[in-house]
Amino acid sequence: MLPVITIAREYGSAGHSIGEMVAKELGMPFYDSAILDHVAEQSGFTKDVVAEQGEYVNQRSKFWSGFSLTGGLYFEDPQDMIYRLQCKAIQDFAAAEPCVIVGRCADYVLHGSCDTLKVFIHSDYPYRIKRIQEVYHENPPDPKKYLQQRDRNRSTYYKYYTDHEWGDFRNYNLNLDSGYLGIDQCVSIIVNAARQRDTAPEPTLPPVD
Image 1 (cartoon, rainbow, N blue to C red):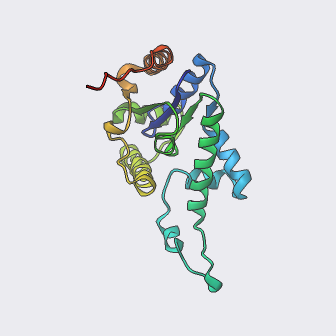
Image 2: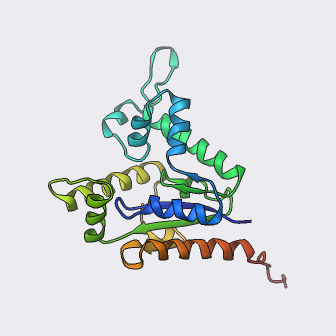
């Protein structure tokens, strides 16, 4: 069986596009905005709120974490609620069938629960700046600083909820430079790795003396 493929990515590195193309090539469901739709429906928040709060820690909202209300009740931070619902959605999608899931700590959420191919997509600043300007149509005054802040926000969110380092090569099976390799080559590498995983024989343990 093909593995579930999770794709973490630096902002502007084409991780979403790569994931979508991998899913199409392998005939798998692709989950990114579908997770937002599901969580928005479950939580009552708008999709825009879920998109922002689902990958970036809002430090002001952390004031409410564990805040005790009268009668021994506790207020659940909206961001924690969104994270909890995202985790449930990711686990449900992965349990149903092999799929491609982008972002939202999916590599951590699914660790140990299913066969997972964990991918991290990154690239240098010139490539990412060109991409956000030409593809995303974003033109911040200082593009490099803008990208650094977006990455810092994702890193902080990942660290807050997983206690692991976002982008650390040890957390992933594949680390691909989309600017150097190109989008098509990244797709090919991921697809081939997934197919080899699908056909690989079950590992056998050596006999015990």
